[in-house]
Image 1 (cartoon, rainbow, N blue to C red):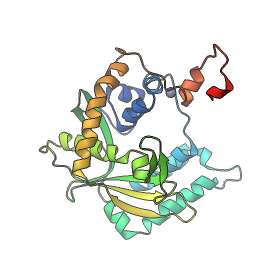
Image 2: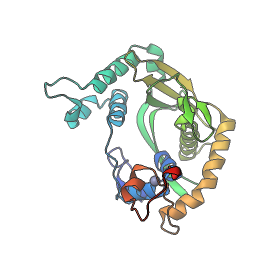
Image 3: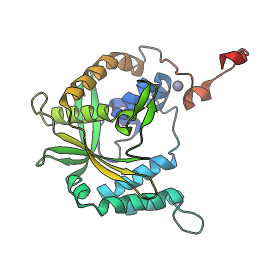
Image 4: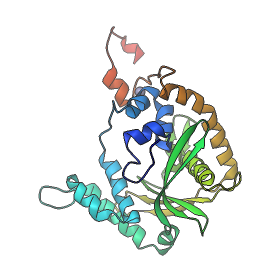
Length: 263
Ligand SMILES: [Zn+2]
């Protein structure tokens, strides 16, 4: 099995050997797309939103100059930064100007942990890990920290934390880190999100994700989903197609006309 480091963490081989939060959520969204990604048959073009998120992370892990040299697409022809990255610079400045946010982000940066859980090996990379202060911290960029958005799943408006399944992440990261560091059952570190918004005047918040009872529910859900996911990932079961994601649309072949009332 691949020994992980920062340069191979996101590689195809790493995703084949390990399960991750992103891959887990991919399988819940569309098994066919998730499997195609694991096999390297479907590669998502990095969007500006993803690049902005990665760029803002570079201020936390100290790799900003390398990131800029690797991503000339951040710049316009006249040499100026493209609009989303001008905002990204404001987001970084917003965090840097806030002593409490900077204090919470103190710790070891981009720490990788692996552990066996629910029938497979998992990998997590924690943005800031601080064992003395007993906390793990994830840096999040989001359109808005306070807006609520519609969730199909529970049919109501929810915060960005619920919308993007960040409680699943909090539970999973806390549990993997606990197992990797051989602490007793449920001896989880505090988990925080440091959030910064992509608004012209960025908002910011330090959000406590500490909720052991919720973690237990999240972990039970993950455990119950894993047998199916592992069967699909290993080729023992055929993947279901969701029918409407980018991958499914790319695979779509027409065999009949549909009636307009079916739309
Ligand atoms: Zn799909």
